[in-house]
Structures are given as structure tokens and as C-alpha cells.
Length: 167
Image 1 (cartoon, rainbow, N blue to C red):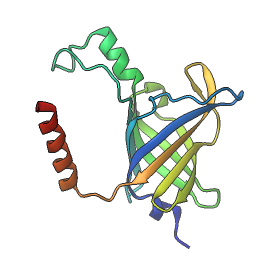
Image 2: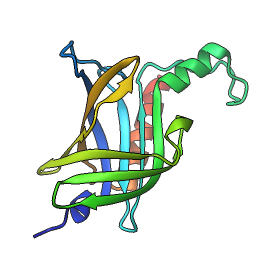
Image 3: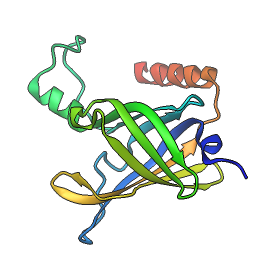
């Protein structure tokens, strides 16, 4: 039997992020309907995740320390990032994150748990307990696709995007 850790190790691209209120209200899309995200699990037991709204405000200044209040609010509210150690419970298919660094400072030194499921190269993560999001208790559902492309593919894609923006 292959361990879940062996299946998780690698880099994953976010396909969807949905929150479902526990009171049965309509599903929420806290990072919009087309979020960007990357999730990495290393073989030495560390992980990192970053999720971004597509429509965050650009800073008027190229100095990241010179943002307006509106730009900073858009930046913070449109981004999730944390990293730390992870541990797998193979019997219950749960990954536990021991958060060491987080954009949201309240998560530092906290544990978070996710239920794991796979379908080929697609990873499904679900919160094991309701979380508070925008004043509502929700269960979060994230769908990730394993990334198998080389760094050269990313550089080529970035260069093509840059060229198309200039034209």
C-alpha cells in the first residue's frame, strides 16, 4: 500500500476553492471564481501554500512598502499564505499542518487539519471542522491538480504572457 505522504509530495496547482456555510446557505468563493494557487509538500515534512484572488489591486508604486490603505486591504484580503510542517494520518486520510509562518498572524503556531482524497492527479482537501470566514462558519473545499511541468515551461509561459501584454 502506498502511503498518502508519497502521493502528496510534489507541487499542486489550485483548481477551485469553495466554502460551504454550515447553515446551508449558498456556497461562497472567498478568492473569487478563478483563484490562483500553489501548494507544495516536500519529502522532509514541510509544506507551503499560497492562494490569490485574480482581481487584487495593483500598487501605484513599485515599492511594496509604499502601498495605500486600499491597496494593502485588497492585498491582504485577497491572499492566503502559510507554511510549516505537516503530518499524515494514513488511517483517517488527514493531513495536519503545524503552521510556522502565515500571512494571517493568528494562524502562527496553530494546527489545521484537512481530509484528503485523490482521483488520479487531482487532490481534494476538505476542512475537518468548520472555520470562521467573513463572519460565517463554513467548511472549505479545495481541488488541486498535480503539476508536472518543468521550470522551463513556466519561464516560457511567463515570457509569452509578458510579450502579449506589451502588444
